[in-house]
Length: 354
Image (cartoon, rainbow, N blue to C red; front, side, top):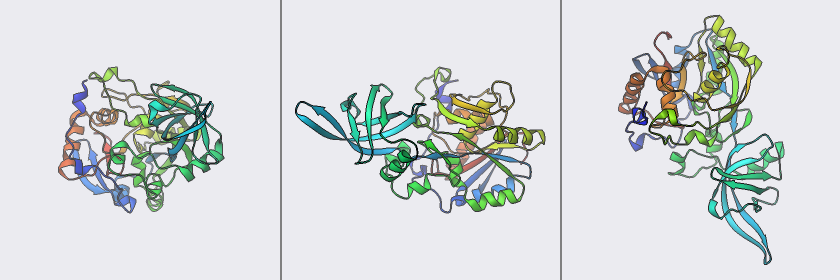
């Protein structure tokens, strides 16, 4: 398939710069096959039933944009220059891949000083960014960046306004637990605790998985033939408890509905080897395009995605390419708000009755 198959025209005014408040007040387009209905996210309990399972991504977004000074030692003493660092991903040794601005001036062997308590050595520099080793790890590192960092808003928001204190609350789910993401699992931003409690009271179950969303989620597809595209890898974990809950739900006839493309990609990764969901941990670069054989997900809760993105390909795989074109045409015509802080959709392929 061609990249142009997943393109559409989006009016600029439909890109949301702030979320709805309260969270469940956002709009929700319910698509059951080709049938479309307009609702709000607080109506979600009307479309789920006892025995259904929501799979939630409990990653926690770190305030990954840091501002510091490069410190370089020379025969003339120390020299300093301002630099902005955006953390991208952490490897098994605790070192961070990051982007620096201005990046061309950063040199291997320099130290970047963020304040008296936090600094990082530049270990290497390559086409993907710089690799940093911080002088703080674990809880000490989390505390330091919580104090110094700004939320890494998506580029289509950051280009229009700077992150502020409100984003530290808005760009985090109410059930965020495990730190490591540099982008939010945005479909989950529509939940508040009251809505979760209401769903559980009517017998809708939840389980948690963890996928640390990376900045690569915003990278454009540059190949005209989508089969030539290489997906970025992200670290994730499906616990044995979560896998068992998912398997038991399917065995009992309940629907498994991931909340967000991150949760869907993770559970489908965990079912690739045998066809059945199992505990799993590692990096996934699964690329879901039309023709994909879904082994876990019966539906999906998700926001509205960028044109020509891998996420457009994923929802097209789930619902059908023409169906997604119709869904997006309806959303645009009816003024739905798009992207990370935008509105939501409940996607149920034909055969998964609401």
